[in-house]
Image: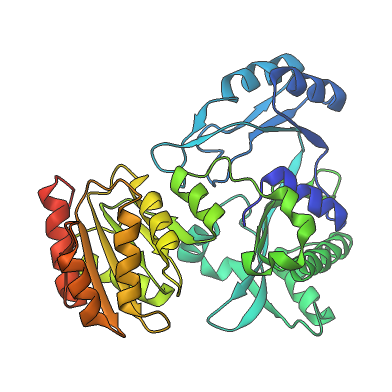
Length: 392
C-alpha cells in the first residue's frame, strides 16, 4: 500500500524524524491560508499523487508569497499530472501540500528496504540526494553505501559510524543523522513497511537535518496487524480496474498491452505473460484470481479486464489442482452469462477433469476458443488480438 507524502510525513513526526512545517490544502482558499500561517519568504507547493517524478512534471513549485501559492493552487487542483510513472492519462491532483521553504546546504539519500536476494533488511544512503537512486546505482554505484540491519540488534554503533562517514558529516551532524537512522528503522520494522525513503534528506544552512521528501510503502499482507493505517489508504486515483480488484481482494496490475490475462497463481501468471510476449503479443495486465476460481471470482475478473479499452482478446489460463477444471469451466460459462464481453476469449484449462472442462466449453452456446497447451493458447490469443486491430 502506497501513501501520500503528507501522510508519510505525519508518520515521520510520530517517529521523531524532522520534516518542514506545512499543511495540506484541497482548495485555493486553504492553500492561501496555510501560506499565510507559515509566514516565510519561500514556500513550496507539492501535488499529492501516487507517482514519482512530480518535480520534473511541474507538480512541485517554489514561490514567494501567499498570492503565488493561490495562483499555483488554482492551476494545479483538479488537473492531471503526467509523470514517467503515471502513463499518458496522468493522476488527478486533489490535494496539495504547502510547506515552508528550506535553505539547503547539502542533499542526501536515505532509504530502508528489504533486499530479497540477500534475505535482509538494508539501510541505504548516498551523497547524491535528490536524484533517482536507480540512476545513481547505474552511473555511480560507489556513491551508495549499504548496511544490513539485523532485526534482533537494529543499527549497531559501528554501522552508524560507517553511514556517517559515507555521508561525510561532522560529529554533530552525524549524531543527528544517527538518531534519524534509528527512528527510520524503528518505523520500518514496527509498521511492517516495505519501503521507507527520504529523498532528499537535507542539511540546512543552520546545520539541521530535515526530511524534505518522504515516501512509505506498506506490506499489504501485514495490514491486518495495523488497523490504524487504514485511514491512509487512498484508492481515488486508481484506475477503474484497480479499484474493482481492490474491492474484490484480487491481485491486479494494469499494463500497456492488448491481451487480457486471467490466471490462478502468481507464478503461472508471470509465465503466461512471458509466453504472450514470446509469440509477439503484449499482456494488458497481471490478474491472479487465486485458487478458488468460482463463478463470482471469474465474473469479477472479466469486469476488471474489459474495463481496459485497450484489451482486444482475453486469455484464461487455469491449472486445476485445488479446484477441478470442470468446475472452473462451469464458472466461466456462468460468468459470461452475467458479464457483457464482446472480444475473443481463449481458454486453456489443465489439471483435474481437464477433458470434461474442454467438452463443457466446446458444447457451450458461448463462442470460446479452446486451447490444448499454453503455447497453443498464447498463439491463438495473440492472433485474435491482432485480428481485432490490437498492436502486436
